[in-house]
Structure formats: C-alpha cells, structure tokens
Amino acid sequence: MRIRKNDTVVVLSGKDRGRRGRVLEFLDGRQRMRVEGVNQVKRHVKAGRDPKAPRGGIIDVSAPIHVSNVRVVCSKCSQPTDLGMKTLEDGKRVRFCRKCNEVVDK
Image (cartoon, rainbow, N blue to C red; front, side, top):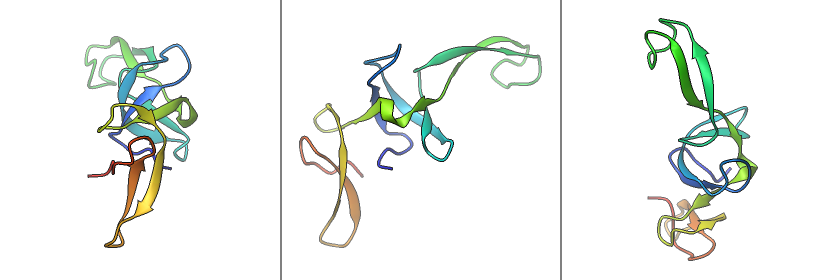
C-alpha cells in the first residue's frame, strides 16, 4: 500500500468528491481509512462515553472510506497522482510522484 497515515488525499467518488483531507488511520487490514473532514456521519453518544462529548449528545465523526476512492496529492505539484516506488543510490526505497517525478517521502 502506497498511501500512508498523514498523507493528503483527494476523494474521487461519492458525496465528498473533490474534497481534500489528511489520512487519520487505516482499518480492516488497510483496505479502508478515515480521512479528516470527509464522509462525516452523526453518532449519538451517551454521557461519559466519549471525551469529545462528556455530556453526551450528537457528534460528527469521520466514517471509513475505501482506499480505491482516494488518490494522494503530491506536495510538490499539488496534483492528485499515483505513487511509484524507486530505490535511491544509497539503497533506500522511497515513494515518488508519477506526474512530476519528485520524491514524496521526507
């Protein structure tokens, strides 16, 4: 899997198509992920069960989205792109943008 936590992604399909967000976590063996501000749903929470709503109530949470519905945004060219893997001269494997050919990893 070439998408990692804290990558910026853009949603390709669904009700949030075109929105950008940061990957928060992966679920279900890395086939689904939570993206910040995308696929928001309402949850009813009892008092004392969630630190976000100590008094209880209705809160918005990000529901998981499938990895096939997002694409990584390159930090250099700001375009949604596929990522490739290549090995540098020192033997380190890094991800690179297939559009601008720049290394994405820090």
